[in-house]
Length: 469
Image (tube, one colour):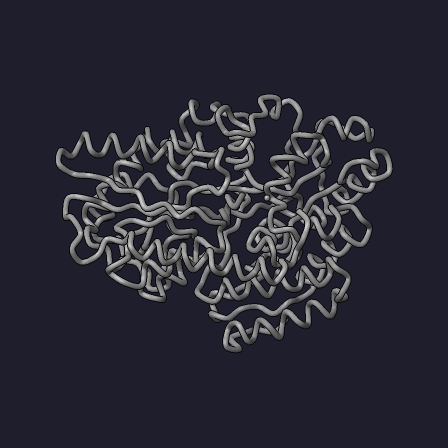
């Protein structure tokens, strides 16, 4: 999520010591509470316990409402069986930590968990998840899932550890009103990075009271910076004929080459030329909520490099209703660096439903997955969550493609998309990328210095399993 970021909002990047202490205490108490919520060795064999990430925005209930409906269906179809939810209400980074705490013991492990593909391989390596291949072999619907989505939940041992519930793609959102004031076209479709930057410069000159361009950066926003900005750039460089981060043949990570430096230069340009938000705002961990809940709806942002899921915050009942969004926003694919083939680039991630290795009721858990992932229920989820279909039968259904403006645009980007090399070391590699981005964003490092620091951090993060470029 992500990586879709469902963490939902400005001022201080570094909390005061007292606030840090209180935050630590709160996290500790939350973890203690979770300890009492697991399946446990004495679990009811007729109850499946389902743990998922609950939105931190109290006005957003997309996942809660969907699961409540699935529970009704499941319990009706399976008399005597019950579903118990174990929600974790936390930002992404805290969710990962709390989930892993639960997975370590049979006393706390639920029967079914919501796993970000960003971290699934790390949890697999830690022995927290159960391979699902024996279940999948007997489930006809598995043949409907697209191969790239299956691969996102497949470990290096070749086994599958999760059932994907959708994917996402990324592109450029732009305000038609801001563009009209700046004299830019309403059907804007940039062909190169320079055209994106030139449009931002025009907005800055002609509409000085708005933020020209937002690209996520730095450690405070975590994987959103890595995936939604840096990798969207890196995979569109001339280095992207092969994976620019990981060499699958050599099974080694790739040091920062020219493409890596070019991607850093783009980020540096945005903040050096003041084409983006103030640095303090850019490094606010809540900036994602401000983009979709404030800056875009209020016409305060010209261009946003962001994900396909944004409309879920603007739908009726979301708490941030914006029915005019499809008229007021335009969509453009992120171009490759110099317009080279295939001309556009996207990154995809997503989440999967996985069964913990220490689950008390794994068979019941998979039965719940099968209820969630019927064609009808999967389609209902994709639409409610502004997600991209990973089932062929849903993707081919006109009712899905026409359900929401932008769905076809973002679904078509799947042909140009890339998936992260989400091997166990990836979270540390991602952090090293964020640190390099933050260095050029604040001006504390030059591009060369940030790239060099990345190489050093990469070697440490991957135990020196690195290919120099």
